[in-house]
Amino acid sequence: MKPVLHRDVGRRLDRLLGAFPVVVVTGPRQCGKTTMLQHDPRLRSRTYLTLDEFSVREDATRDPETLLTRGERLTVDEVQRVPDLLIAAKLAVDRDRTAGRFLFSGSANLALQKNVAESLAGRAVYLELSPLSRRERRKDIDSRPNLLLWAENG
View (tube, one colour):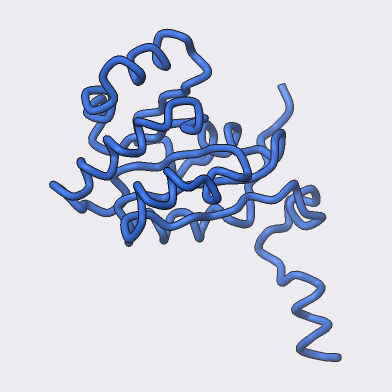
């Protein structure tokens, strides 16, 4: 198995989970959302569910409010598959605004969908995951990006 590459957004994701009740990670297909959610060491203590699994998706469709109680700090991957889950998250957050309560991931256009924007307005922050950068591929995410170095010295 290939080693998992740490992502630039990992630290920012950790900070956002410490400040907001809902964090939504979006990005294009195959950019590494699921891999990051499953393997980032900062996320290991969270309960992970994926709506790619038929039984989980069926549970989410049948009773989204109960699904959201499966973990104190819950990560739900591919959340766009059951939009009603976002309405249930809104209700849950309105009752308890604990930071880091929900971490959702979905397709790149998730934040643009009207029902998502309305459901999570004022409750969620969105973080876009891009395809791997050169620094990430070199396993050098602690160095300053070349563009910043150029701007500072240019």
